[in-house]
Length: 208
Figure (cartoon, one colour):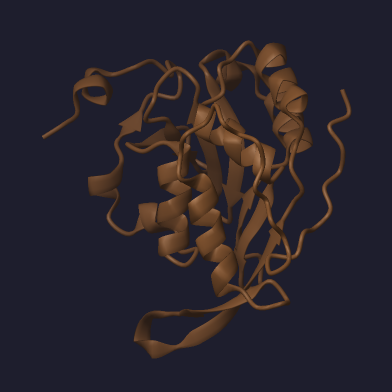
């Protein structure tokens, strides 16, 4: 199934309000707040450590159709989280906080989700779906749980963040695109065995 190539919407001109009455998250409000901060060129000024500032650019794709999202669910036999489905029905992928030199976070559009899922069947069979990328790794959603965000870099391990897709996206925006999960990793995630991709007890009950 060809899920289409995205084109870019202007942050300042786009009204993404859609009929998503069955979904009840704050994603639209979060995205509206980001849009209000942007200029007509889809740019915002962000502050760095030491008082330095730089321009970050955005690309928000047009919405995916619900049947296109459903195609991914059926093809890989997974239940995609509602907040992720809602985001894709607002924007079929995005480039967030692009400051140049390859420093940005990309939320994959559905064709990329499909393409990358096809080449990693062992990972998909464990319930993880690749949904985003940042310079040093990939973001996955574990479709078997509510708190579902995992990261994976060049090592053989996956790292868990106790948050859902909406919470991860909002935290990324509040951090001005900085990879907040790398700031204090011992507080944000624990590592699970890539060979098993199974639920550990601390993932269910929390940890001290």
